[in-house]
Length: 483
Image (cartoon, rainbow, N blue to C red; front, side, top):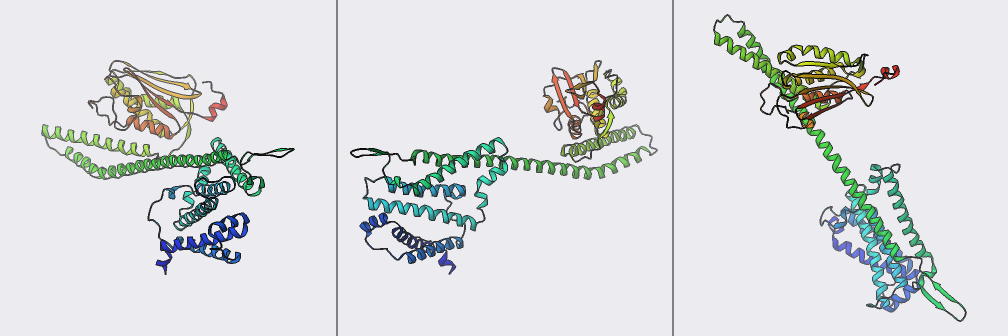
């Protein structure tokens, strides 16, 4: 039984019988149509009104039931991805045009009877095709997915300019199409030819067609264009969201991978460090033994630092570090961090020049994250600044917010942009002669952004400059701190 219901032949028979019943229904309700059909086919295919209505309803229901029971898939039609509401409008326009041409035009190729018969068949086919397609989409549970306008207005609400403009254009075209249908159904003057002039002995009458067929077609075309423009915008939004989701997923996977690998490496590394300490404590008086254990100790400590930096960079890049925002003095923190690098600066003959306001600079930040970011910035200057030069540490204000800037002259030529230098594993010395990990500026940038600040690197020739723009505390604003 199910195979019979799913058979295309059975659906075709239901469509033909439904067409005969619909033809009989229209003949029973239109004397003009009945006259022309009588001249064409006589009294054949004519049945009582009640029987024709019942047969039409049964055939239509059977056709839709057969479509609902049929299997999804098969031939991929062009319209299967079209907007369902647009298909309804196009079917409506087809019916309206068939009625219009039946009332206002004559065919030069067919007789009037055959012409009306073909127009009726076209209108019936449009209606049944629409009902069948809607039923198939309901069967496959994708009707909602092919209604573009609800999704469009969820993405671009009417309160937004683009949503409001689109809603006005959509409503205007729909109202015009509906008004054309009402005029076509209700206005008796539409039985006249367009712009026909009738003259009698005393008066001249001009019957102008209010339908405006070109305008009607333009409105339908505009509606179709709006629909597919909305579909295009929705597809762009969907692609952007998909790309963004994939990027977030990739970043999360990378962070988890780095975290897991770092933890796995730390366990044997801790054992190596411990055994190196035991070897150093042995009473072995051998210069080579002492030299080799010293190298092992140094490299193990170096590897431990790299793993810690890698783990911290992963957490900072993923934004998974906890943040405790408090009010603090930027000048005080900068002074403390700068004092920790006195020995490193002296070793490379660097002179630190500090410039800061006379009064405290209250900011809102996480002290641990800010201190770590400043340490990375000062460490970068200690490693890559030209020996014998000056390093400038300045605290100023930028657009009302406190800004810390560290400027130095690079020892090696810098052939990278500021943005490239804040990426992962990027170092100023391409030859990798120093022991930097290439993560310092990347970690500093992410930590500053994590506490609500902005981090920027500028390169001009050999001049290297790092800027940290932080958030001014509410207390300092209330006190009227003058930037």
